[in-house]
Length: 136
Image 1 (spheres, rainbow, N blue to C red):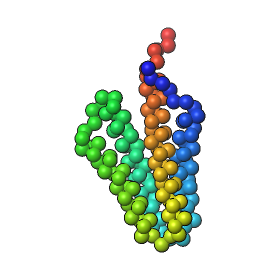
Image 2 (cartoon, helix red, strand yellow):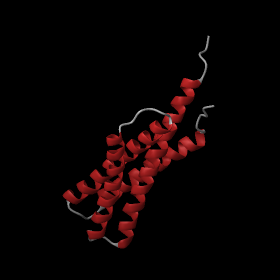
Image 3 (cartoon, one colour):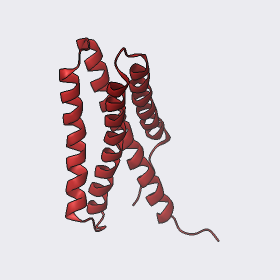
């Protein structure tokens, strides 16, 4: 039986996604760093969100028996790990206060969690909708 995600979990997922993204972007906007540095961190966020959704989709597809090529599955995982490594290296070498570094790390992680949860909820809601008998 396919279960529809609860409204509370859907709302919490969207709040996590937007809170993480908005906090990260506002932090970048207000940061006293060069524009190329801001671009680096923004690109890592966008790439990380895409990679997270891609990994979630690949894992879910495989669990449901939908074919996913090994190469795409591997690229998705490598991309996710690469975004985390790039963020760590960037923050490690940045001339930011430790509190700012922690802020960016946690805003990134909250955004990634939110993206994965929103993707899961979207997928669950669609599966629930498709599993209902047709109305006459």
